[in-house]
Length: 631
Image (tube, rainbow, N blue to C red):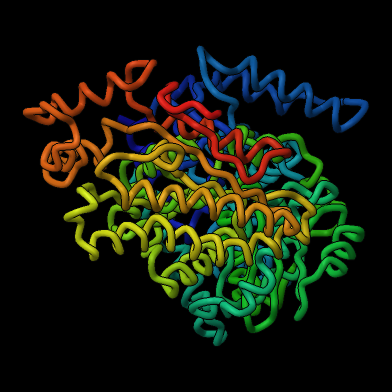
């Protein structure tokens, strides 16, 4: 039951942004023999009972007897070996702060980084105020995390124990957060609640707000002007691999290094400038040795960059948190930043590099690529979006069915977002591109998949149906290309890289289709647009290609029991002798040398080829199982 309790406490505080950001913090439970501690790289919000690393307490305590090392590196290596030896059974990499948890002789220990607490721990007068507000708590001046910190706390706790005949339940760490020990869930909650109440009351007395505020939305003119350019500069061959840029309403980004988490995810410094151009980015990079992860255009917008969408949003969360800490620190004598030596230790520390790497995910083939898929809520579109996401891309799912797009994005998880769009409406397409730029900073791959089909004889086909198919399949591709190309052009000029527009066409764009003139005509016309756009946009380093799938017989376009093509073709008499939809299906399967319909994964491979290769544009790539072959 105790493991269940610490898991529940972990979820409680880990899911609350007021206490934990970026999967930071750690928790533990101990019995007489073992310490069960959160492993590095596992978030408190999602931790399971089975995730906790089981460690022998006696072996772990032996760390504090280590001494006489030639260097700090030798000491840390030895401590790491002892901690590894202390692990019982299979388990992850224990938190580097495991010795800290062993020092506190309480059943449960919860270490968090609340902005409210760090407003005090990052305050110039934080130590003095802490002594007045929390007279039974222990304050520890900043020292490098790891065993250095653990040994300092170990020695300080011995002094505290001697002076007070008890152990501290609350330990405030300068520029780092708070450790709380308790023997029950209720006690833990009460202590934390009391800490937060005391700090809120004190700040109110000082006339300092503890609530973070920023502009409700960024200036979209600023976003459209700078986000693609900023993303382009960061994606260039000589720049850091920060490839997704998210936008926020204006606020003041942190002015210096605050805590280890801020250093690991958002770096110590950002750019504050009314103009964001290559000279500004290059000057910052030359001075700091890394491309900025935070860029503030005062009063207009804040841009945060990361390896992918999830990483960029983490940077934004830390930037907002840092700004709030600086605001609260005004109640504690102003901000106390980490020194250059303290900052450099964190930036070069293997432990934090490991944590950042785990948090940012693996480097799949399309990691950091931003892909937009229209018509992505279902059918081929959803299959394409799912396939691109599995390869690491951040996917914007755009669909007339906004609810379906949001649901599909939720199913794909981190990095995916749903957007509403009517590709036949110019204002709707323009808004889609603006929304995508605000969320991701730009576009690398635009998959124009949205399409419709209406079957029937040319002798009886209704003009409204003809116009409907043409508006979506032909005009929609033009509108999407028009607005997407503007963003890609800016981005590519800054990065000197290539981006891609891929139309999901059809085998019906390669050969005529009986009783299906509206659809085939729109697809033939689409290939004309592909070739024409390719010739024009190559100067902007934009490749334009098409993939021409065979029939996705299992998708809703074909299989919908009311409006699916099986039903339409049966009613239109397109398959002679067919008496039911099964007859129609068998007829179409028999036309394919590979004896099956096309699947989304077949199309994803073709799209990836079009995007990854560097020497094809204006092409139509058949994905038909041999049903349609090029001359």
